[in-house]
Length: 403
Image 1 (cartoon, rainbow, N blue to C red):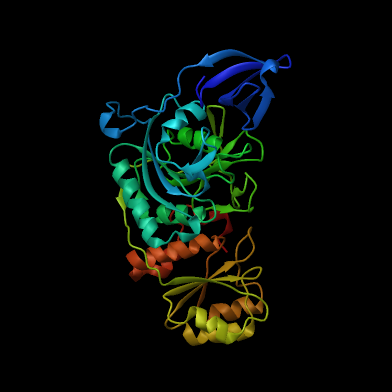
Image 2: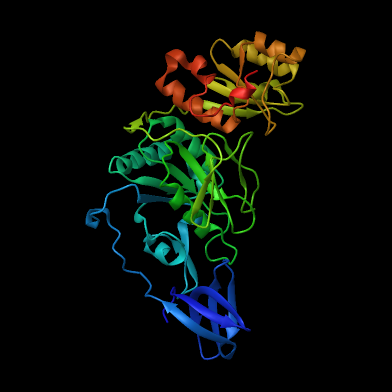
């Protein structure tokens, strides 16, 4: 048997499926379908079936593929945990250079034509606006050739990247799906392969949006498809870290089937990309006792600032004084530190003072999404900047919470 071959075997009178890793004169190591590795004595197992040869040399170059249809999927790797794979022959984790291995490790993908391009190999905290523009341009290039897009990305800043591409694409002919993994593929409990499997199946939907596909729960059952502008990483390490905030995820994938949970924008006829972003935007997280000079230094000379206020959207009196001084030159927007719900500056006197200081409430928009939206609008629609910031463009505002 070759490393990576799918096998069926019996162990202690039970039948299992898995992937052969290695064997010596005494023991055999197998990766089970649930993602865990087991090492057992050779005399305790019986190999019942071996399925085909490992497809190390499968030709997946676009130029050599004649079939062009809805099942063409272009995977763009940018780095992150998911951008690495285990080499079972050496035991080392290495960057993905050839995605043909997915045909051996991911279920239910035989009907899809997979193509791959490695764009980057960076930790997601190093992503910036230039990277987002590169991702968007490459995605448009591939969608213009009738391919859906999956972007392998580190999870820590994936919500920013998904939001950035959501705004830059005013229309798109195919889904763009970001996915990542909380645990690398060399770990028995890796979530990488099921996240990829779900993403590949979601890519055949008529979703004309930028989305995030990640585990729905801690077990290996379901993958959720989140709208890119409403998703947030909610846990540092759990496999189901991502959630759609104050709404339902678009769809759920389970074992080859997709269940639609919420409405979504359909695919368009053309790929319309506005790839300009203004970096002179900031987020400021207010905290009790914040000094005026500290706040001033963070916001002075910015084009726009997203303030993460407490509760319904509040800051202290001394900070309001600074805002009043600068509001002629800087746009100030208010979002909430709370994960759920929206801001309302009409309830308390502090909120009304903020309104008098020209602070603009952003309803229930996520602060990270608001920052990226401001980067996009100020670069492309500066003449109508404030009105568009308050307008629901990509599903970033829930219409039921328009306070």
